[in-house]
Amino acid sequence: MALMIGCSCLSGCSALSSAPPIPSPKPTLSSYLSAWADRDWSTLAALVEDPPADFRTANVQALTALGATAESYSGGALRVHGSRASAPVTEHLVLPVAGAWTVQTAIQMRFTRHHWRVVWTPAVINPAFGTDGHYAVSYTWPARAPILASDGTAISPADPTSVVIGLYGSYIKNTVSLSKSLVAAGATVAETSPAITASKANPTTFEPVFTVTWSRYQQLRPTLNPIPGVFFQQLGGTGSTPAALIGVVGTLGAITTAELKRLGPPYDTKSTVGQGGLEQTYERQLAGSPGLTISAVTSRSGPSNPTESEPVSAATVSHVLATFPDKPGSAVQTTIDPAIETDAATALESAPNEAALVAIQASTGKILAVANTSQGSDLALEGEQPPGSTMKVITSTALIGDGLTPQSPASCPPLINVDGESFHNAGGEGPVSSMLQAFTVSCNTAFIGLTMANLNYNSLHNAASIYRLGTTLRVGLPVFGGSVPVNVGQTDLAASAIGQSKVVMSPLDLAMVAADLDTSTVRTSWITEGARAEHAPTAPLSATLVSDLHEMMLSVVESGTASGTGLPPGTYAKTGTAQYGTGNPLPIDAWLMGFNGNIAFAMVVINSPGNGGPIDGPIVARFLDSLGSTG
Image (cartoon, rainbow, N blue to C red; front, side, top):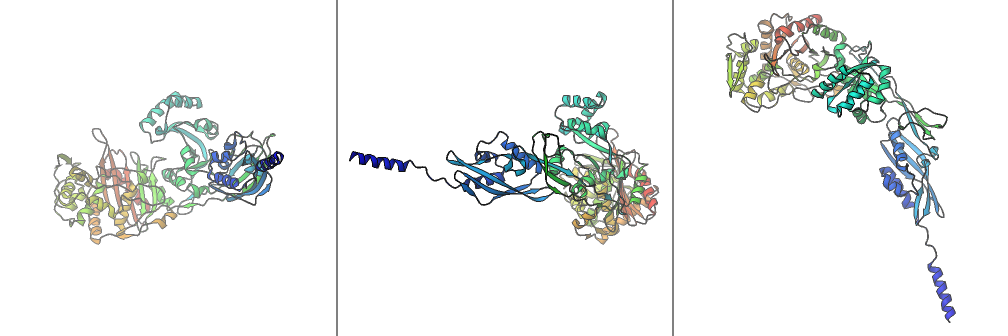
């Protein structure tokens, strides 16, 4: 009896000790594929049997090398053989150049320590990797497309011949190490020290240190590029970009860290990209897409950055997995008229200081010429300067809208006091009895008096809005759209009425106002064909407003502040002289805006030796005479 119990006990114990059935590996496979798609490397590693030390690095580098922007993974039918299992996997990758690309791989699993685990080697990422492979990706860019003038001639930058190495103070972190690095690269102490000081004083302005040849730049760039504050600007040879247009067209330069982050793959640290102007705005259109070659390299002896192409050495076996052709970029067509651009640049050659001029075809809004005397800057389109008395066109718009006419009474005292602030005239205005006369001789005190008697804090802002000043202008590249804020007090209103205080504009802004008055229609200007579709609808101006301002602007040329400057018959204009900054006397900017025939224009001279009429008038006259004033 006891034996039977023992046998029963033995039989029962044997049944209890039998191994439980092995669970399905499907949950492990699903979890692995999900974590892989989420780039959740910690979860992924936990699902791998004995993950190697470089597990995370290998997975990250594979996606980084490809520049994958999206990925997903789908598993096929599982095959289970006892404690081992396998499943085919399709990798669905989206690459910057190639678009969708699929990789067929397989995942092996083993049931160990009561869990299914993935048996991982680099071959899981791509079977061509074997036990130690990785991706090598190389890009071949097509020839860059050109920027074209209105007649189809190229106005693109030249191929680089040299590079200016310089600084942006806002990025500098350690001036001592920066100075040592620049000197070690070949700059002199006499070049380095003042440049660092200047860049700290003007942190958003590029401060050149020294210039090197293109080949020398290629040698220095790996060392200097990582240093905070160091930037590069390429210089062309005998390129096709007119000097006066460089600020508009832009240049080509080595990609910066910020640009690399913004553009992303397929750009890499060796890329050359557009710097400023149209070249930067239309970078992707002009550059096109590079051809792409994806290879499997079964050696880790290559460069530390697998996103760049690498040589094949004796210890490296490279196998091409896929190739994709390049896609050439397309040209950017502009409205720039080469002949008119030349005329504008030639006229500006006599400017006494930095100057800019914009010319617009009034009937269409086409920007025909953008001339800057300072190469690399774009004062014409992006300047933010107080417009001085050219603002009286806007102030008159508000006054006429309030019921005044050119014949409305006005006086021109030498001085006017507003809320404790004294405003005076430039001198030589003479007696004034009407708004027309005040406009003709540009009397500040008259316009301040009319403003304080008739307008409120919103009036000037609303009048500027009629011409779409203060809006984001979509002309084809970033430009400054002007600013006439709502006034915050009596003195602010008084100063704004004569183009001071916080009122700032660019020559483009005032040229657009002139074009609107020329055609009695408010329209947005444009400089690239692609910008035409983004235009706001046109809007008519009041016939009374246009008639009154035509009378006033013609009087400026015939007998006022622009008379005797050589402006051709049929020119309607307004001069401006804006004081700013500190000193005795204060520095001034000289302005002139207006139209003749179908050409609207505006120009400014910075830190001018004289007022807008005598300084700008002869320059604009020379420009208009070269056109025959026919538009």
